[in-house]
Image 1 (cartoon, rainbow over the protein chains, first blue to last red):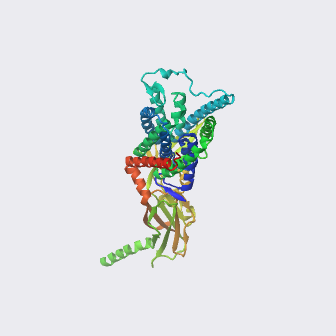
Image 2: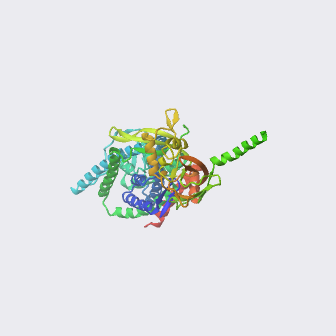
Image 3: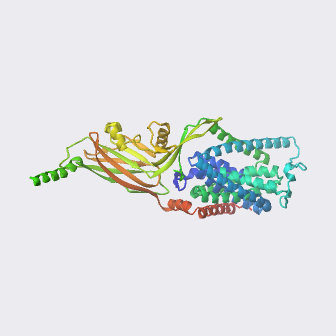
Length: 309
Length: 257
């Protein structure tokens, strides 16, 4: 069934979009991530303008992280004070990201920026995840104890001022790295149309030593708020949020996420991280391929909205 | 004597236009308003026309018709990619100023057979002869048809079905009655369209007719598009609320504890 998207100005098959929502939702539920880094490229591949795809996917991520955050909230696995602290940086990052997004769009370099950022971000994160999970799997094979928290190993930023105690997560860290992480997540989230959950979770675990009990729930609350505000900001500045597209994606996504979460329970955590690392790396390499290989068409035509003429 | 002279002059005046405009074009479009709804996947309009001959016109058979449909004007930018330190990226661009977002040229015969090159260029018949203004430095000008930016711009617009040139699209149902199908793709831009019908005979334009049509979004699509453009903040809030409700519903429906 074809449906006409009012903002993307394009007819699409509603079932294809819905199926994409379900599949990405399944993956996001399984790994506890938003899935934006998969959804945005898929939409661009379908022929939706990158700018519309990025702006609309924020709605999809907001919905899936909302349902996730609620279920973690019921299990008391959310550290609200840590989430609030991350969001202070997150808001600034989102605003900066939306501004940059608007600027790049008028310069015609948005596609390239999205492409390069995906390559760098996804390959680096993918490789790190792979290395970490392989090490964890090998360690458990040898029967050694699993340790994610290495007590006594303090990085330089643990010595920074403005120390804050986060009770639920039982950590005592400086607010500066917390703000910085929040800023980074908000920034890349709004520029690239990704929630940043797959970056935020490892950062919270390895940099701030947040225990696994609260890390995913907290990350989901942060993702929910940054994505909902990015959605509003994109709607105000660029008028590119396609609500119809976003609705189909979020309905598919939230349904898929439920089944994904159930599938995820049956797989061991280190294997899950290995799979996620492979997935992230694969998407990154796919983008690298697009940038390195001569495109089918060297020319492109886009509307030019500027009073300069 | 003077009276006779005046009479001849008047007669000559009365006859002269009749002689140059011996044929008249009458056209009718199947639909002057195209409404884009959620099920819109493109549409085909039909234009009927007839060549009206009067007593003064020579009986002719070899008419040629050129139908040119132009959509609302738009500023477009064409970019060219090249390899820079191993990465394919946009390196050069050209601005197309006030060019039609849709351009359809439909004819009875291959365009070069209709009239000589000079006439075709003067009347802007065919995509190659149509003026597509570019901004080059501070100048606004059109360039030769085989300019790489112009030809690639036209090629891409044709790929999207927004520009088209069909050289045998018009069929004469009788010596004077013709019909043509005007294809509008799904991605057709909204706004006011001009339909320009030119009648050629023996290599010269002998009549011309203009009509208009409008393409617009209706119902829900229009409501959403308007809301997004005019009430960005409320629209954004509504979209965010929609996301929260969807997420909340999912967590309630699939609740397992």
